[in-house]
Amino acid sequence: MRVVHLEAGMQLFGGVRQLRYLVQGLGRLGVDNVLLCPRGSAIAGSGTPAEVIELAMRGDLDFGMRRRIAEVLRAVRPDLLHVHSRRGADLYGGFAARRAGVAAVLTRRVESVEPGPWARFKYAAYDRVIAISRAIRAQLVDDVGLAPGRVALVPSAVDTELFHPTGTRGRLTDAFGLPADARVLGCIAQLIPRKGHELLLRSFARLAARFRRLHLVCFGEGGLRATLQRRIETLGLSSQVRLAGFRTDIAELIPELDLLVHPAEREGLGVAVLEAMAACVPVVACSVGGVVDLIEDGVTGLLVRPGDELGLTDAIQRALTDSALRTRLADRARRVAETEFSVARMVEANLEIYRQVRREHGRNR
Image 1 (cartoon, rainbow, N blue to C red):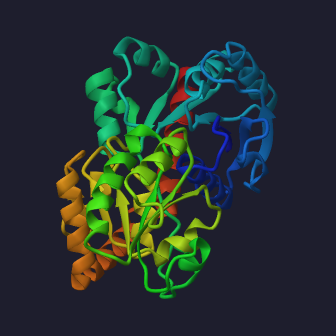
Image 2 (tube, one colour; image 1 turned 120 degrees about the horizontal axis):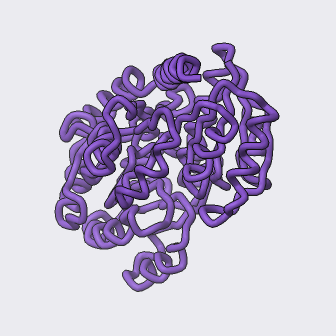
């Protein structure tokens, strides 16, 4: 089987890392993978084990994207096109596949409302739409109106060999100049409004008055960086909060966190939560979107209502002051990550969808 993977993202964010897991796993199973991505994108030079074709991709208003994608598909002659992102890829990819006579599937990773008529028009070009969480699947079926048989559920995965507990301490504190006895909260998310950084900073300001050794490191980049830095200074937290930017060594840093906090207002699934679970780091998160597929409150982490500042503060304090609770949550979360969100399981589920779609597409020709 030959599959073209279309990814329009420029950085190695969570969705792009999922694509790399998928391509690596499919390759081991004998699938011939071709990666179609923007010129100059991070994934183009990341060593992903696939034939890489770089193409101009300028977003939703790049009306020539459909033609360019179709030309690649005609030249490559794949069995299937798998679209992994938005930025015009989800709009033009499916119609390009139709134009080239190729079956197409789309993975939907975000939980955001789309106008029903527009979404139905866009998704009509796809043989399957893959949702990474129950919340996204429900949105596609109940709100958009897609037939349940056209929407598959395949959760994201975590590489539990890459993200694992280390039992060491020092790399994280050295990287950010923190005291050796610091207690460190981490937040791993793009610096955009829906990720909830403002809520986290307000909560942290309350906690900092009670826990003198407490520090917060926020990993990620985004348009809110300058705003958040000013907010940190206004709250008097400059010595305790770091905006760490995008890090390529995140797998080595996560295991040294005392706690991962994920205060997102909306979330497709929450890859950072999965990574912390695999690394045996206890998680406090808002009960939104696909996060509830990962975290069972009081079993694999602690959940609070979205936007609940006091609830978030209390949950973090509870985790910080109860070592037995932290250990219990972390150990159970690691087991769930290993058994329910493995890369092998995600790869096999996608491959089975490819097989189904290829059979259907062959019958309909």
